[in-house]
Image (cartoon, rainbow, N blue to C red; front, side, top):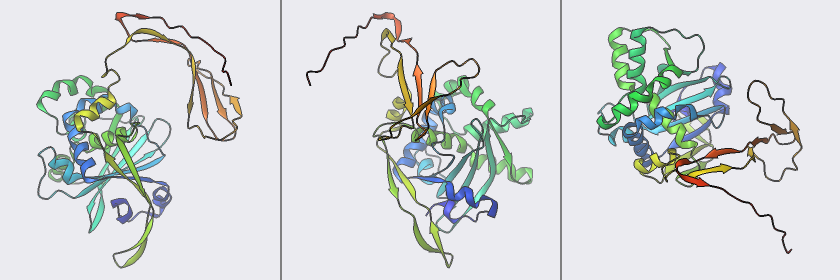
Amino acid sequence: MSNLDMIKHPAKDEWKYRQTRQFIFDSDASAKLGKFSVEHADLVIKNHRFALLPYDHVYIEIDMREALRATGSLSDDQETRVGYWFWAVDADTMMVMTISGDAKGAEFIPFTYMRNMPDYTQNESYAKTKRELFIGQTTADNVEAVNACVGSFLDAWDFSMTYKMPEDVFRLLIAECAGGLKKAIAALLLLNQPGPAIRMTDKPFKRQIHKGKSKVFMAHSVVSIDLSPKQIRKTFQTGFRGSPRRHEVRGHFAHYNKVVGCEHDYRSVEVVGEDITPRWNCTKCGTRRVFRRTFYRGDAGIGYVKKSYEVTASNA
């Protein structure tokens, strides 16, 4: 049972809840996420633009006590689980709400996070508060790296309050929620990582009694992480295996959301603006096909590689 299932939804948001895909981090994954978001905060911040939603409505819940215990910052009154409810407003704009709770109940935290919200004004005091709220805890040896890349992160994200409160309550809430958005972005980045290190186990929906009433709890995926926080860092680093020698990459087709078994009927898509990459969409299943033009990759300082391709006929 997640916080999202327990909380009371306004009637206008019920459709959003029904369409939300839920991902619940187990205790071990929550601890690793907590350490990763603190010890490698620079990597999370630097890659924030790649924190893309796999669905239009996504809910990620972590065991916050385990996440904070892993970094030595757990307080006695910390709620057990904290969830982040993401939804896409359009192709560029994203909203996030936070739900905090435990087995007894859950409630919304009065912060709404917004990415690429147009015409959002701020002052110097707001900018300072925003950094404190968004970044939170980092390690001493990571501060310089965070400072070097934090600008674009703070430019892209903003926050608002869902209701007004006294200044002392506001400052206390900022301190309690510091670094929450960073953890949410880190969790979303991990969900987008390929390979067997991030495992998901699907759990079906079920009906259960909650507060004396029968309630349907939505299906969700339990997320497990088979890597240490240090190893997780390597999954984000394009050059961790060592940059190869400079070489030419031949032009090739790339496919997105490809449906296996479809007899594709590709139709050309009109290209606008400066992007002249040829692209097609399948009218039957929606697969997107693009042609990546030839380009160069690698480090010229360690040499060049020239490839030759041999085409042979099969004996079959």
